[in-house]
Image 1 (cartoon, helix red, strand yellow):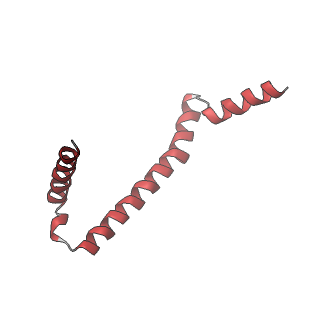
Image 2 (cartoon, one colour):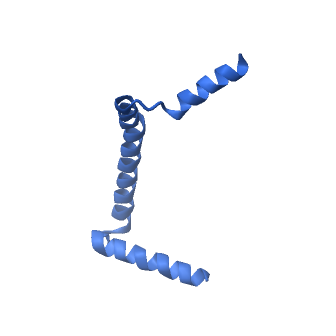
Image 3 (cartoon, one colour):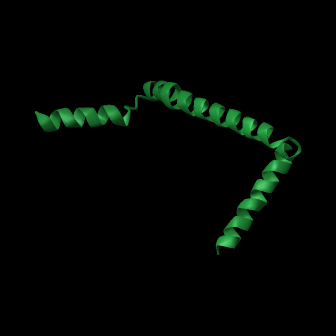
Length: 78
C-alpha cells in the first residue's frame, strides 16, 4: 500500500519535472525556483484573501463571517 502511494507520488513528481523542464537544472536551482513559486503563491493568496475578497463582498453586499460572529457575540453578552 505504502509503496503504491510512493510510486504514484514519484510518477507525478517525475511528470512535473519533465513538463516544467526542471530536470535539466541543478538541485540548488530547482530549490530556488520552488521557493520563488511558493513565495509568489503565498503573495497571490494573501492578496486575494485580503483585497479581492473584501472588494467582492462589498460589491455583492455580503458580510464577512468575522463581522457576523462579532455581532453575534455582542448580542450574546448584552
